[in-house]
Length: 237
Image (cartoon, rainbow, N blue to C red; front, side, top):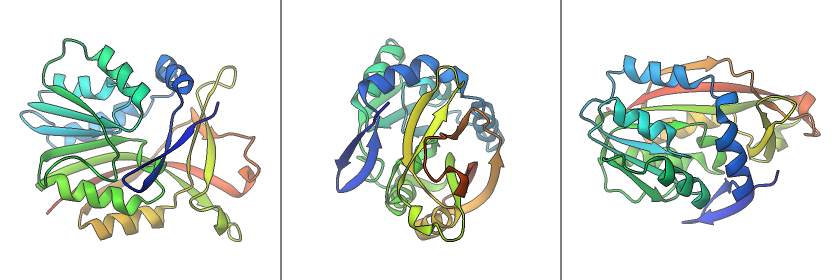
C-alpha cells in the first residue's frame, strides 16, 4: 500500500492514498486499542463540556463525533487528506456543531488563542518538522488550554542515527490482512525539544502498549529500531 507525499505551506507530511483511506477506515477497529486511554486522559483533564475543541488530524471523524457527544460546544476537525475528509463528512452528516477543514497542521487556519482543548491521535509523526506543528498548537491554544496527543516514536540503535526523519512502514492490525502506513522516524528527544520550543508545559507523558501497531518486517533496518506509543498531556500556561 503506497502513500502519496504532499506539501502544503512549505511543510512536508505523508498523505494517505484513496485506497489506503478506504482500507484504514474500514478496519480501524482492529488497531484502535489506545483510544480508550486517549479519552480517559481527556476526562481526567476535566473533559470538553462547553469547550471549543480542535481535532488535529481528524481522519474519518470518529473522534470528532465522540468529542461533540462529550459536550463540546464546537468541534473543528482538520486533515490534510481529501479522501479522509470525504469519509468524515459522510459520517458526520446531520451532526451539528462539528466543522471539517482541509488544512495542514503546520499552518493552522485559525487565529491565536482559538481553542480550549486540542487532541491529536497518532498524527504528529507524519510531519517532517514537528517543531512547526507544536508551535502552531501553542499558538491556537488558549492560555490554560490543554493538548492531549498520542504519538509514535522510534528508538534508534547507536550507529543508525541517519534513520531519523526517514520513512518507516508500520503494520496495523492482523498479519492476515494488515494495513501498511508510512510515517517519519521521530525520537523522544526530537518531540521533547519541539514541545519545549513551543512554550507548552508537559503535564504528563506516558508510554502505552499498542500491540496491533508494529514496524513491518519489510523495513530493512527493523532489527535496529524499536517503536513506542506515547501519550502526552500539555498545558499552555
